[in-house]
Image (cartoon, rainbow, N blue to C red):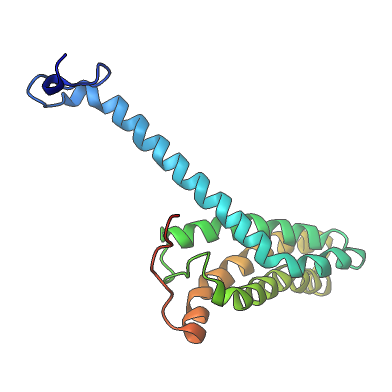
Length: 179
C-alpha cells in the first residue's frame, strides 16, 4: 500500500470510499450499543457516587433509627437509594427533562446540594418509616415503605433543579477543562 491508498484492512470501505450498508450495519450496531452501555454505566456510576456522598449526613440518623423501625427504615432506604440513583442518572441525562442540573464539579453549590440531598433522604427513609408505623398494619407498612420511600426520593430529585434555580439562578453550563 502507498500513502495515498492507506485503508484499514478491517474497514469495509470500497475503493471509491463508499461503505456498503449491509456490511456496516452489525459493526455500527455494536458500536452504538457499546457507546450506549458505556454512557449509561458512567451515568449510573456517577449518579451513585453523587447520591451517596451528598446523602451521607442522613445515613447516621437512618442507621440509628433502626432500633425504632427495624424493618421499615431499610425498606424505605433501599427503595430511596435504588430509585434515587436511577432517577438522578435519568434526570441528569435529560431523558426525562426536569430542568437543567448544575455540573457535578460546581463547588459553590455543594453546601446546598449536601443539605438538600441529605434532607430528602431523611424524609424518604425516616419520615416514611414513621408514617408507615403510625398509619398501616404490618403488611401495609412494608408495602408503603417500599413504594413511598422511592417515590419521595424521585419527586424530590425532580424538584431539585427548580430549587437550585431559585437559590443560584441558571446552572453553570461551561464544561470543565481537561488538564
